Image (cartoon, rainbow, N blue to C red):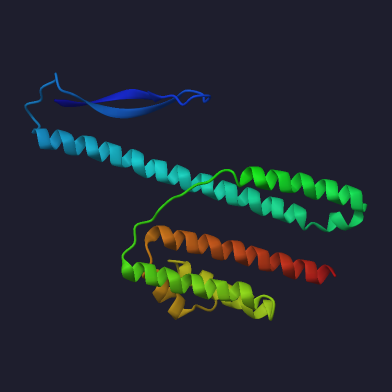
Length: 203
């Protein structure tokens, strides 16, 4: 029984053929240098690598979808719309809504295993970030400063500027995957706040 790396093909109806190199166990091959357990562990190690790659690819797809939705949202809120007639504006917004709805048909679910303390840490992190979003309507500049402090707390390198020790402590209590998502969410929020500041300056 040996691990035999071979190409396994998966074909879904209506889809192009996708080939994935996956290992199999050849029961006819004998190996004196490895025990059955060693062979099985070797196979599982290889499969684990494929699972991790699958997760990374799914996360990349999720990021791409979110980026598309953000771009569509910017189109729907573009200043150019004010220069259009009502009929033309309705046409553009209807077109954009149709693309948004099409994009939302792509559903991705990537579950992250967490213990109770990690769940609680993530809950508190999300509560703090939600507070930034709500506070934007009251004082955008203060929320921008807080957002920068939160972002600085996400960095493992020496950074200049203010840090939020409470946020940093909570973040360290989260899983690695959640830490990456939190940083991405904060970066997106920071970019959004900067866009609002640019619009305010132009006005």
